[in-house]
Structure formats: structure tokens, C-alpha cells
Image (cartoon, rainbow, N blue to C red; front, side):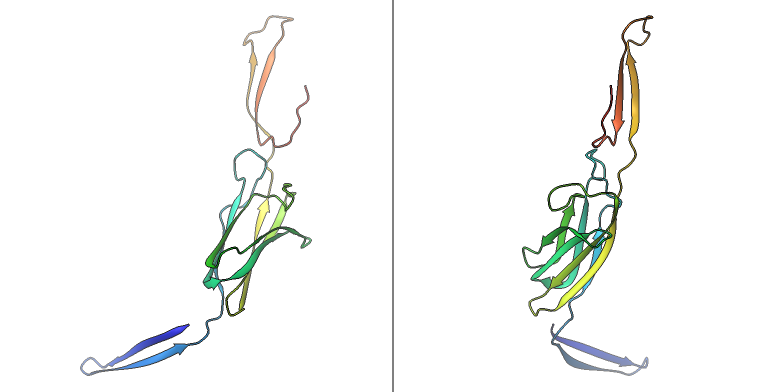
Length: 170
């Protein structure tokens, strides 16, 4: 919104003429210009790799109210954030957990941002992000002593990646 002066220039290569016109824009509809996620898939299993994704919504002008919601395939809300400060950018980090702090199951989740401006115009946009837990992987296996004698005890050490909540039997 605002008042703008536009200058039109016409030329045929030899002669030139110009005219200024004042244009007043009263209302610009609120829109979501960009909606992005930083990471996909998300793997909130405690291994320090792909633990979260940052969801960023950029609006064409300041929003004063709104929220971001994460829903599952059954459209059940898993997590929400509310706009705290008026801004044209609304950003939150999702760690793959629901409102109770429990890691959500593997699957495809929809994130939806809704913003309202001071004139109560509304804009919304959605995207998807996957939650996938990688397979358990043994990255290193060793034993001690290196050359055991017959009947001697042996200690086996395994370094496991993506263990998450896996239990190891002795």
C-alpha cells in the first residue's frame, strides 16, 4: 500500500515525451512469498544427524497474528507455534516431536502456516516433510585381546550408528 509516482517515456528514436502519473495503492493482498524447510527427511533419533528442520515462511508484508501447525496423515495436529512478534518472516525449528515432547512415528507430515495482517487479511500455504529413522548400522567392531588363547575371555566392542532406543542383548 502507498502512493507511487510512475513515469512513462515514449520515444521513436528522435522525439521523446514523458508523463508522470501518481498511483495510490490502497490494499495489497497478504500472500506467503516463500515457504521453505531446511532439512528433509528429518531423523530425530538422537544420533546428532538430521535431528531437526527449520521451517520459514516469508510474507509480502508484516503479519500480526498466525500460527504454524504440523499434522500427520490423519490430519491430527502434532505441534503448533503461534506468532509472537509482528514480522514478515515467521520461522520455527521442528525437532520431530509432538506437543508432549514425544518423537513422532515415521511418515510424511504436513506443515501449514497461516498469517493475518493488521487489516485481518489472511494467507496460508502448506508443504510436507518426512520423518524417517535410518536403519541401525554397526560402524566399527573390534575385540580384545586381538589374538585370544583358547578358552580365554574376549571383549567385543561395537560402535553403533542410529541406535536411538535400540536395546542390545548381551
